[in-house]
Structures are given as C-alpha cells and as structure tokens.
Amino acid sequence: MADILIIEDNAELAEVMKDFLQVEGYSVCSMASAEEGLAYLETNAVKLLLLDIMLPGLDGFAVCRIAREKFNLPILIMSARHGDESKIIGLELGADDYLEKPFSAPLLTAKVKAHLRRSYEMNENKLLLTDGELTVNQTARVVYRSGQPLGMTAKEYELLVLLMSNKGKALRKEWLFQQVWGADSFSEPSTLTVHMNKLRDKIEHNPKDPRRIVTIWGVGYKYEGI
Image 1 (cartoon, rainbow, N blue to C red):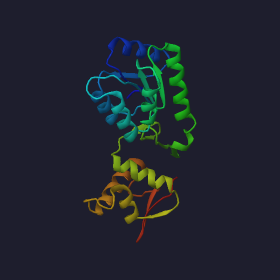
Image 2: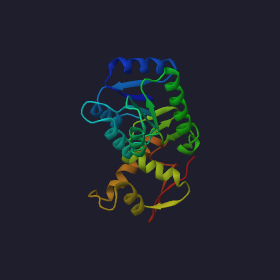
Image 3: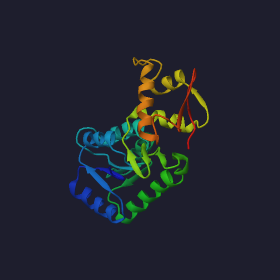
C-alpha cells in the first residue's frame, strides 16, 4: 500500500519524483503503464494519483476517466502538453489539478500536500466510525480492532458500515440484504446470516453472546455498540 501512486513511463523522472516525495515522508509506488497503475489501484488503498498523459497503451486521459469513476482520490495530471485544451480535457475528466512539465520539486510537493490536506484532513472525522477499540476508516476501507487491521471481505465491511452508521436502529434483514447484495442478486437471503456470523466472530468479544450486533427477532439486526 502506498500514499501516492505515480503512473509515469519516464523511469528517470518517476524516480526523481519518488525520491522527493519520500523525503517528505510519503510512501510512494510508481508504475510505467496505465494498465499496471489501474491494476495496482484495484488492490491497494492509495491516497493520491500522479498521472502522466502520454503513456504507452492507454493514455493518461483514459486512466483519469476510469480512476475518477471507480476510486475516490485526488488526481494530479502531469504533462508536457502546454495550453488550455489539454488542461480543460483533464479537468473535465475529473482531474483535481494539472502540472505542466517541467515543474520544480517544491511545486510538486506543495500541490501534493495541499490536495491531501484538502481531501483527507478536513473529512477525517466524518470518515471514521468508532466504537470502543473498534475503528472503521472509510477512506481506506479498513477496520481496526485495538489498532490492528482486521481482514474482512467486501460484504462484511459493507454490512459493518451500514450497521454502525445506523447505531441503535433495528434494520430489517430484507433491507440489509438489498443494500449489500442488491435486488437483482442471485445470492440467497440466508447468505446474510452467514456473513453476520462471520462479522461477529471478528468484532465481538464473545461471538456466542454478541453485544455489538444484536438480533431483533422477527425483524433483523441492530448495532448497539459497547
């Protein structure tokens, strides 16, 4: 996992940017192609994307469009193309900023810091769900118990967020199933019970006597917390 992903086919430039950003304390990963970069984003939580336009295969504009549709993170385009046309295209596709090459290292780091601060620090409290030693970081989609990350499937994570976001409310099984699996899902409603039991195994002190997620007979489940 990296704070910043660089997609840049110029290996020398990518290495220079990586070095400067690491000096600032960021963890950085660099990829030389759009395909590699998108594959990395699919499996890793990244806070910011630095994206070149002129790439082999898919260009940076295509990556920007795909990344904006699928991932919630700041996107900074870097390009040797000067002029308004490329800037407008990039911004319309969802980029948060546009850096014209060549640019200085101080300008790069200043922009990175500004976008990270704007995107994460201001929203940090809104994107954290806490209950005792249990914390859900909705930005990174990671659940921690006593500071240690818990391995969760996507469905378990989505169930937990729904329950914690509606603390104290009795939620019907049918509603939970539709929210997580969708009305057109081929899964059986009993799947919800299986996932709820696995979730309890991970977050309850005593899964056989749950205190956080309680069953409301004839209705569904309620998150009580501790």
